[in-house]
Amino acid sequence: MSASSCTVGLPQMKDYVLTESLGTGTYATVYKAVHKGKQKGVVAVKCIKRSRLTVSSMENLLTEIKVMKQLQHEHIVQLSEFEWDTNYIFLIMEYCSGGDLSNFIRSRNTLAEVEAKYFLQQLGTFSYNIFSPCLHVCAMRVTVIGLCV
Ligand SMILES: Nc1ncnc2c1ncn2[C@@H]1O[C@H](COP(=O)(O)OP(=O)(O)OP(=O)(O)O)[C@@H](O)[C@H]1O
Image (cartoon, rainbow, N blue to C red):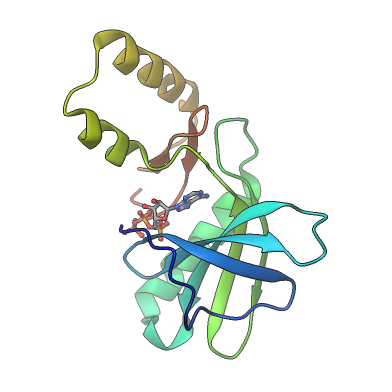
């Protein structure tokens, strides 16, 4: 889950320039990126190396894409597009500038009751969401990643 601004050897995309790593998960690295035509602004691009995908991680990925395409909610990160080349599958998502909720909590050691209540109230709005999500602070947005039904 580490972030870095080293751009050497980053995956190349036709329409986006990847600018910095936002973090790494089980089977992908997520980068901040800008649209080359500038119409779409800043996005987060999840880059999945195809050669590292097993049958089960491919199934998880397809589920993730299917679910993210269906969910439209102000507090759920929107998947705008996905594309692929010979080496990578790219999920192009809304960029959450506030970082990762778990890092936020760790950086504070503990949350004040009022802060915990603020986050829990937002989580309470996901009553229809049966997945165990990865959380990123935006106002607060949820990415449905690492699905665990
Ligand atoms: N839309 C986003 N905006 C900003 N940062 C993001 C976004 N999506 C992911 N990240 C960052 O990239 C990191 C890696 O995300 P990724 O989805 O690959 O893995 P994860 O969900 O953290 O873990 P896992 O895949 O193991 O469940 C996250 O921890 C987060 O810090």
